[in-house]
Length: 188
Image (cartoon, rainbow, N blue to C red; front, side):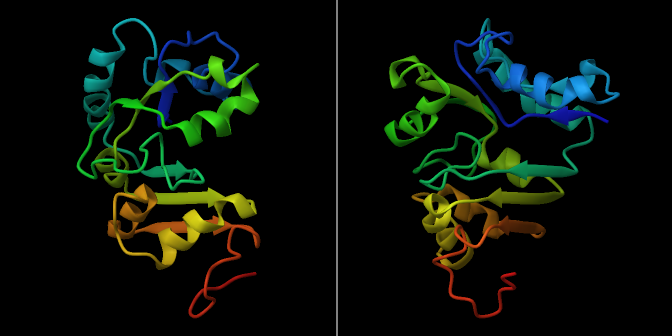
């Protein structure tokens, strides 16, 4: 098995408690029989710009992504592709918007400690996956889910790009589904 994470904060070492590499090691990889040489997280330090440019090539060399797991931000971001993201973007360095910084401040001592940039797979990179599963919970995600499921494709809501993919499953709790019109949608 080979894994590719969506993103990593710029400036956080892999050993930093809030880096996604640290999170994945602690919460998943350390508990699996997986070769960590086959677990990829974008570089957030060192020559992270060059690393971002090489990330899609690494994915292609591995045969692409079979299953892409996603969450969604309150503003509709997927990965760290914020509103107005280019839907043709590949992995690159992105600026985080204030709402994302504030939402992620709960993981840091203060909002001032949240990195202002990240390396993120781009929308095009994400859409290249064979299958996508997006998971969301909580009423704070309801507007993003409504846009994803019922809205028009537009880069004000980056999650709407998923409508262009042929195999997407959206898994939400009732509160995240709270703004959806229920016609044709199975809400359990």
